[in-house]
Length: 432
Image (cartoon, rainbow, N blue to C red; front, side, top):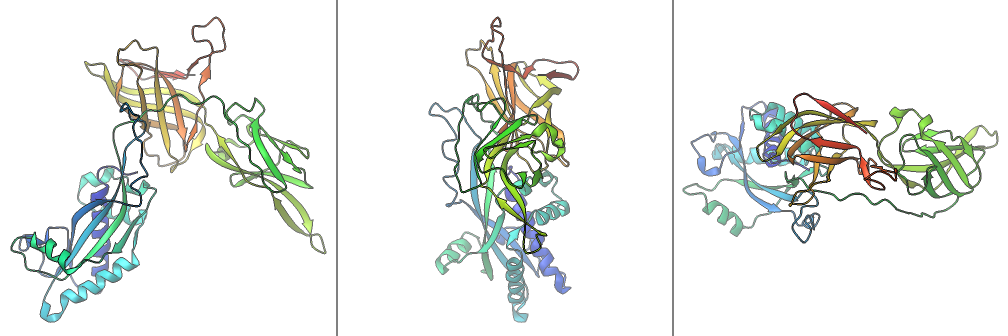
């Protein structure tokens, strides 16, 4: 998803692409982003003008953000808006020398060669821009790439566009569409506490993995220190490996119906939180000389590897008179988090006597330049109170601790890890 400067970032990137294209012939040609009716006020005598004249919802993705609220109006996820940007490209030059027609050919060829705005283009355009607001653009993080395609405008449509430009003579022009730009709301959503029981069964051809569960029980999350029990049929081979993601590992024990793999024995830096694919690989020699190694693969089964919160540190916090705070916290995880992994912080208030009910918040992590175990979140408009803390990494959610002490007031309830939002004098940490 992208923030509020995404539209301006697309325009700046298109301007950069066009400027690079028209500058290759050695002639000083300027690309501007002004309304066509400002001729004489910044429009060059020889140049190309890029003008965003219309923004419309993207029809194909109009239903991708249904039910962002509950019936009572509570936000359950951030709003998203898929947009198409419509541009009018006009050309200025000596008509007698066919300069406008030459420029139109250069622009058409340039946009054919750069029909997709890549992250490298966007980064370079923002770096060259003189607008400081574009520095906070996160258009490069958008899952959907922006594609630029020509659009056909009828004579009637062109007439309507140019008729709105008062006292502006018609110029040779092209129409292009940039799509799709995904804008995301700033208003945080909320998420209820997690389901504590789940089951799945997957059946495939031989060798078959039927299910994967930790040795702590089927209802428990799979963590970095879990031991996996991979159950199925014909799992034992001459040489058996377990492929987890892109890495292959030697299991601790192998039988025809069950394979044991200890995640705690694997290098921690090779594990990643999130959805992982698991396969059983049988290696065996083949060929006349038995020197060729062939691999027989099982069906692929999805596994969700959950991170565990090691600490929650309040770095800064400011509380206003209404008991609402803004600040920054750092959450330490046992698994490294990649630079492109999506990370969310989930806060659920506990033990509140407020008449407004319990508050829940969702915050997205700040950008990371390198892989790290510590993730930074900026909090906004969080009221004073105690909160259960969860972190989602690519959808894999850190577990909450359940109080097993029968004498405790929190018996058989979630009780850790917790974060206390209160006025603070120095940074402090909260462990599990």
